[in-house]
Image (cartoon, rainbow, N blue to C red):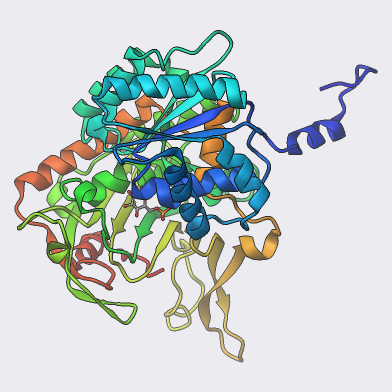
Length: 511
Ligand code: BG6
């Protein structure tokens, strides 16, 4: 930007970029509004955005579900969800303004009358709330319903924006259950909505620490020179959860850990960790680089030795007894669904040839933690006695995605004393200590981006398809090879996973 004199004005540019991004006139329609995700994440995120002043004054929220609710019942549900899960303080005036734009439409997905009522509601909101015809349709429903809902939106003219306005589709993962179904789903959605109006949610991309991977790598000179096969021994990407499957048996059983989170969250983390520098930070440039690296991902030839799936059995967690997966309510007898999955991947390019990427995830593990650990090779030569270095591990850079957000650098240091003895120490960056601003919740960021039409943080069709291309052979192999291994709830997973790394002369980190 230049000022009147024609000269660039960097100060004004910087200030402009710091202005809050506020959504223009718009509304959000949520399908599956009575579900867990909507109550715990979506409704609270909408309120928090309103509370931070990032939504337009007439913003409207429409719930669509089978429940026999009136608008007031829906508003009461939102109120409860906000009270329980919102991150910002409750403010009566913000709530009142938001509640003005709340409507509920009762119906089934195949009920034409219900979609006509939805069309009428959207029209009324345009008139009463000034939403300007701009609506995003959030499909927080099981994927098998996506095609029907999208077709109904088309049939009832809801996918057609009035002149000068927009209509967007927001789709929650999983995007299909394998490559074939993902392609089919993609076809239906893209027949109805133009590709730049389709937003696929992978909420990990909305996390502050995940976006920071790009800042860490591409805004500094320090890390990039060693970010390659000449220095990196291997990379471990861990997403461990202490929770079981809770009330989500209907969704989870038959899907399992690998489809639930490796296909999306963990492969996205891998892509951001391994990709080349994009030409810019616009969506096209970012996607191009992520896609390039995902295309280069290769599975090991022997999947029996380099992948593990397992199921939790009863155990102890946080001092409480936890039942095994097969005893959870709603799980099919003898289910072989994986609640733990670990895979070894290679990346066939010049930067990463020969460097294994180990991905693991599991429910009911020792602790909730997500991290990316880049583990470096040992020094090529050591002038120290082997006794001095007995306790020395490898250097590592760990991006702590959650819950203790930050970055840790591990390296060896001399233990104070008169002899030369070396031990690992860490240098820490913690968000909480370095910044006073708190990180926005991923769903807040992503919903705001949808309303603004900013697609940087949303995976595109190609990425989704590449991720299934990687995972499908693993799922097929597992389906052919008996039952999953077992691990007791509250532990760090099955011994088979330890053996998998031990065969490569490595071990999993215990975060
Ligand atoms: C979801 C998965 O995508 O991510 C859940 O479907 C999982 O199974 C959840 O529990 C974890 O999200 P977060 O943000 O708590 O790490």
